[in-house]
Amino acid sequence: MVVNPQIKLSYEDYQNLPESETKRYELLEGELVMVPAPNWFHQSIARVLFKFLDNFVGKNSLGEVRFAPLDVVLSDEIVVQPDIIYISKQRAKIIHQEEVRGAPDLVVEILSLATAKRDRTTKKTLYARYGVTEYWLVDPETNTVEVLKLTARGYRRAGVYGEKETLRSPLLPGLEIPLSKVF
Image (tube, rainbow, N blue to C red):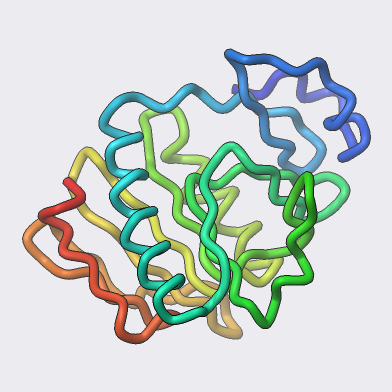
């Protein structure tokens, strides 16, 4: 839900919004967009994916994994809060105390009825533009994960994995997530 499309905001404006314990927002091309609270299944999926990613990344000393809510500032007019992000240790300089300033290596978005269109279009375009190397679209309706890999021409589908399959990541060779444990 776009709050007021006539008013374009900057990251400074976004930071000065009153804090809310019940509402989360993203800033997309200067437009303030309310992000709905995740449901129980969404949170369960996020928890399991985070655990697999964090364990793999930690065991191999590859970088950092975090989960929402955490601001990822791609530009002065684009601030997103992906469900899960991974940042390689080579790019750790983009991690700041209050936010991440730059594109994570991996973004995971768990779709909902309210966010699916935006995650598949607007955010996909933005993530490609700002250099997110790999983008996962997790669909709780179909129990699938679509893995997209950034190329010179935008994202290319690296795979679509169902609940009886094992997810593999081009970005993180050796990572295997049995989706039967996720869905």
